[in-house]
Image 1 (cartoon, rainbow, N blue to C red):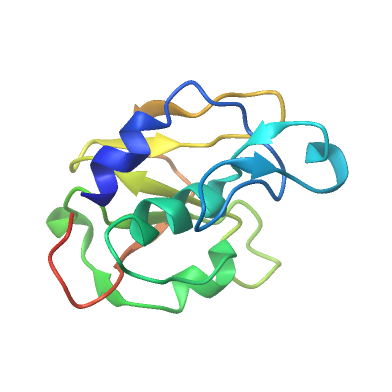
Image 2 (cartoon, helix red, strand yellow):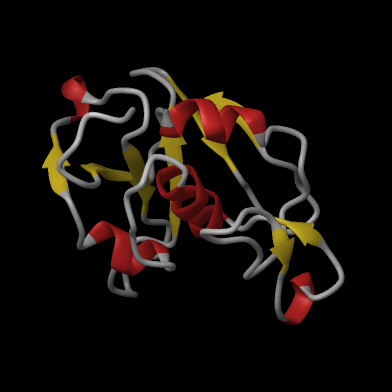
Length: 134
């Protein structure tokens, strides 16, 4: 299950550009010395473990899969946040573990953690792939 994989990563450091289909890794720029995940790398890894390939960036992940109404979010769905309305696309993605909580790789200096899903910057949710491997 994609949600279970994301939960298993709780505690790892946030690493700008870090991680991907193969799991945690060193990032780029300010994440170059940190082994862990950024938000989209965590999402990509969680889905790769259930055999679903998704894009690497939150903006590209937002354009993939089926859009899901807020009240229909299920574990494994990707939830997106847009904190800069002047720039197209979401700036952040996390993996839902239910309708109220998500696994989030939050920011440089933070660690992967479970947090509330509801935020004022919530943009929407996407269900990657066509299988039911949540």
